[in-house]
Length: 112
Length: 112
Image 1 (cartoon, each protein chain N blue to C red):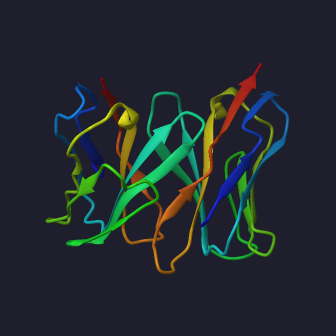
Image 2: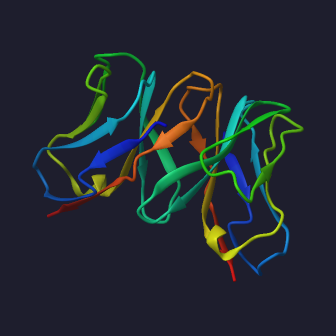
């Protein structure tokens, strides 16, 4: 089954404790991206990747890192999480930039 | 900076009625997307509109794009309860940055 898989689905952590949210897709898609969803703000793009080893900042990249060493994986790293990063995070992939995106199930992160 | 505005933000409508959701974007864009999100769920792609005058229909939903007016519309015909969800439009431009900008969403509630 074609899908985008995020893990974990739920995470509660403490300020400053490094964490990684994984994202994997099995559709051989080139374009992958991360979004955060906050009430009243819609979705905002954090980082995106056009292909392996090619990443770039979205609209809200501060406090986040990404890497794209393999085509299928695009992890989101929070080196020192803070409470303002409490949010619902979505990973998405598309065949190439501009094609329809397939979204993962989301990761609800709470930083206390 | 690309800005995307949707209205209304909340829409309560009776089954059987027609209504339109509007999506305005602020700068040149070469693609417009519509997504649906059910409560607590991920996003599902509805339409991808790539050119001026593009119109796409799926069931009771029809989306159109007017690039000169920088406006896309999502028209709902004879609404049914199953259409209750939040609808997002998103705009992108293949320029120096291949980023997607989302609107804040329109929460649609269809009542009996």
